[in-house]
Length: 245
Image (cartoon, rainbow, N blue to C red; front, side, top):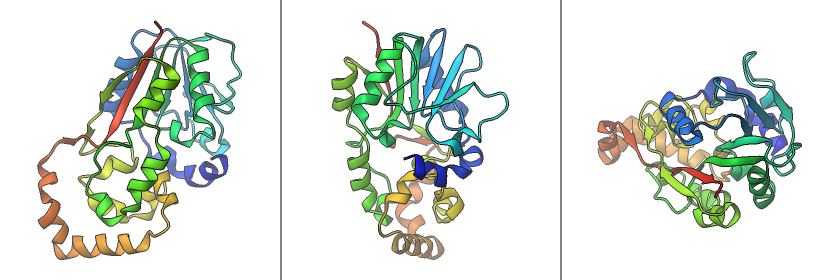
């Protein structure tokens, strides 16, 4: 993962900008936690600025994209956090747990260093896919192999609350589902470069060619044009909250 993000992470500062609607939901989930550790922090898009935050990321490329006003950052692995038990009130992990080399170790570390709650943004692999999988059917298998199930998260974290996070049509954060109402964006190599999922596909070009052709001919609009009227869409993204009992 370090090697992967040292490569694909170069454009994250520009392409993976925080979306304020998602940010509000995350902050609601953090509640009044007095301090936060952000694990797999990347460029720090969703870090609170109203309380002490420490960021952790393994990739130097990601760390170097953090702004001057970003929280202090430590280069370390999620599976071995260099902090004592209960150092922070809350731990957050935003679209990162599917990249960890050992999910169980990483989740236990979140629970260990957070004395009040753990907040995770992830995708439920059991959720329905959207039109993108018609062009890249391999995405379904990749998600199922990559993202942990909600049952797995509960097994590691204990009781959890799971909240659906609909994705707005003009989402500013360029993760894989962000452009569901802007199909031409998936043809842009630069935009795809900030989506780790696309690096896992064995057959990318046939899907790109077909999508380009369908957008040009109007076939995409005829089949999927209804989504252009929707303001947001549930694409399987979940906020998972584990609070201390």
